[in-house]
Length: 68
Image 1 (cartoon, helix red, strand yellow):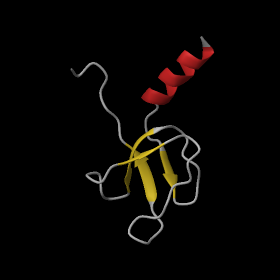
Image 2: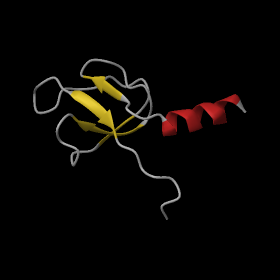
Image 3: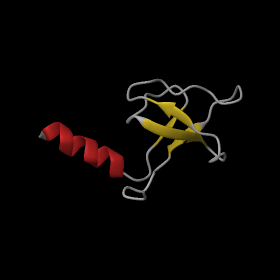
Image 4: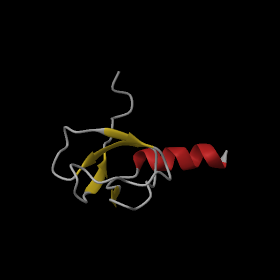
């Protein structure tokens, strides 16, 4: 039961971000700073890479639940 609660918390946490060289805090879709149309999938624990050869801040993309 704990794991389900943790997954729900991670899926709704707003403002997740991480910089190049840091570990991804939660699996999902991430975009580099200033380029929301560029989306990469990273899994929890993955080290964020540079984007276009430069260090950047990665921001988590959110999909509204129940939007079907």
